[in-house]
Image 1 (cartoon, rainbow, N blue to C red):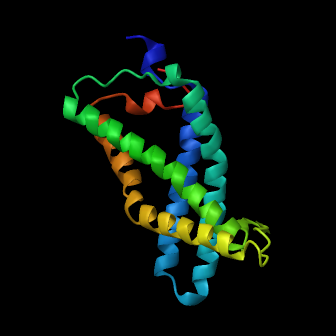
Image 2 (cartoon, rainbow, N blue to C red; image 1 turned 90 degrees about the horizontal axis):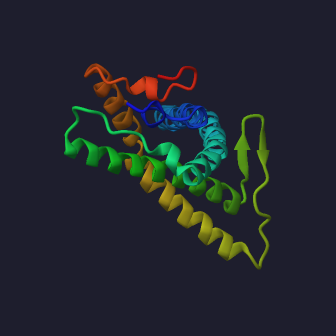
Length: 187
């Protein structure tokens, strides 16, 4: 087996794990906010938005790297998996990439164009300044971004455990799935 085709590059692996951590934290914070009493919701949403902005900062170079280094992503399909599994894997990966690109983009647009700004851990980056001329258009962008963010978040959050579950299933089958994506050691 060609080792270059059997594993991801160190850069791709690192970006994978960085974005995984921020995305899981982001989803976890919004789920916690939904369960929290009213006085705690704001704190959890601030964390959610901070991790969402950080996710966007990580996803942007990850997507660029993926696009400009397509040959580095020509990973061999795992032996022993059916053609249906390969098709489902491609669909779920495509969905996960769409989710991790659209969620930060829509969240950032919502905060910026809504005028409240972008929370980022210890500060809030300012949003658009509302004027009589732009109030309607920026409000429309924020409203549309909210609809996209809310709808995609409701369903897309299931892609993360689906992805993790598929990786665990492959590992239990004896596939060296985690060696392929480990940035600290190469297979």
